[in-house]
Figure 1 (tube, rainbow, N blue to C red):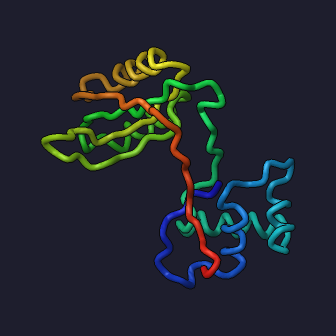
Figure 2: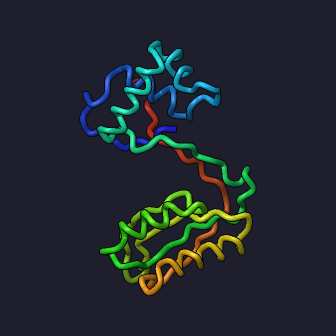
Length: 171
């Protein structure tokens, strides 16, 4: 499903781009040739759909296209958002490093809210249970070494639906 950001200029996308976004905003069709299915729906070639999506990625209208797995259905029920206090000048490096771990689905920077909230790096860790998640969090802590100035884990209690940009009928 394309993940998008707010569009600043209304002429950044045209009617065909909007049709492609509408056709994919709930996810790509689960068929052997998803771009062809989207193309058939909007009335262009699969190559044109791919070119349009690439242009929207390049311009920043769409941030990424990727699978959004349901971790619970895959047996990962101990999911936890790990939060870290790391030096600000190393946040980018650690975000990339942690985000590449096979048990982390996403990692990102968020501002601290001192004195109550010292954490500036978030990373979603997936495991079959909470014990497995805690072992994986300890692997991250070892990776950070002395730059881990404190961390915690906020465990998921329910599934929240992730969605990207939604275009209304008038858009």
